[in-house]
Image (cartoon, rainbow, N blue to C red; front, side, top):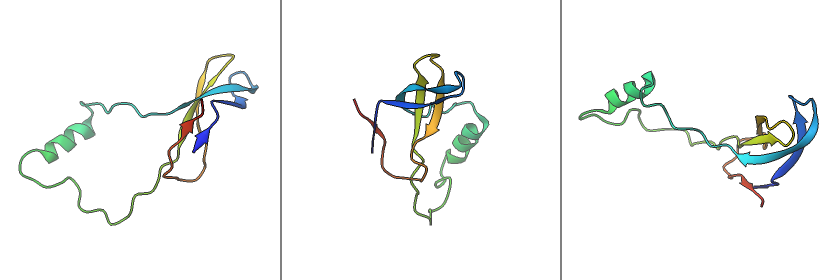
Length: 94
């Protein structure tokens, strides 16, 4: 799915419609010392199985998120471009 590299949309900081630069959102690294991460490592340690059993439900697609950067105030905001869940990846046109 192709998206233009600039979109004219509302900026809540400037309070008007301005051109925004589009970039693809990528989630950051997980924290190794977070409680859930340590618990998961403990569970997986030694001779065990997988943490969870077989999945009975087929995986759904994700809502594709983009980061919009205002050209005037340089503030960033996230936006779900396609409202429905989709397995198609977003690609920014150059």
